[in-house]
Image 1: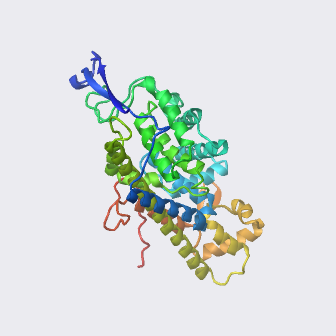
Image 2: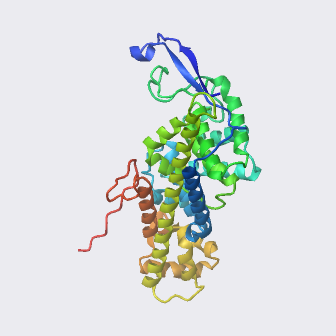
Image 3: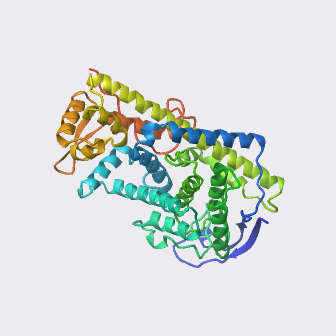
Length: 429
């Protein structure tokens, strides 16, 4: 039975705090139902929304060749997820900065862009989390702790990484007491058993994968098992469950970015899952269906936007071939155009193994693509000559802006959160 526990917060006499921050109060902490063994049913419309979303995700993983065949672009989507989850300075660490920092890292150049390097570390942490659990074929509480530890590594909160909270936390209101909190998660003595139950539920296969991921995420956010970093870990859990269930073997749709854009609806729908009483009640049923329907809609929207990006990549490749002129099939230039979506920033040395051609052949191909305006020469570090496919990077920035627009169209529905700035169109004078 889901219930509220009434607790007492003692007043403090600490100096430097306002009267409101020093006060004591009675507050209510929410303890959710266990998930294992629950009978969960979907309304017809919600079930249809889930089926449509899962079909879209499966299609994206099957057909989006430019994305699937390019690990780097899949990682760009993961980057966007990592940044949105991590409170690194908005999305101002755009794809261009990230890709240049990534190349510098590969060239063993001392990083000048510290913020971009922090984001790269976040990506590595999320990728590691997904791969580790995928290899284990199941998730247990130790995995959740390890994911959290990895996500907080190198941050000011590193000492809290991988440690279940032993004190009461809350969301909203004062930083010093839960008296005006919007939500108070379960007391610390309930957290371990609730995490264990959550993992058991996440390893089952009785529900559609998307439903399971949605419920697992909602329950994790309700438990709020850590001192900080719950958002990052909860979003990683979505991808972990979807990968475990085999729905996303290649490409993880950036569902968290859409949920972040629909922030008010997201919070309201999560709140609706926090019923009181029996899991068989009408309130429990309606709240869960409301949340699952929103999650399915966000997933479908994420897939739609990713597919538009896929289409834009294909259009760019056609335009590049037209600008370069006649290209022999299988030549270094031909293969490099196919490979650019996966490595929009490269050197001749990094491109050679990528396209399985000699450095001399790649150097000639790069020069030809640069002459046609497909590639632009840049410098990474002090002396490393590199090249970037600027149009491709700009297209990804447009995708990030689109994902931040509530209606998916920035011309009349502006982004609701920080995103990369749109580059000005080149002057024609």
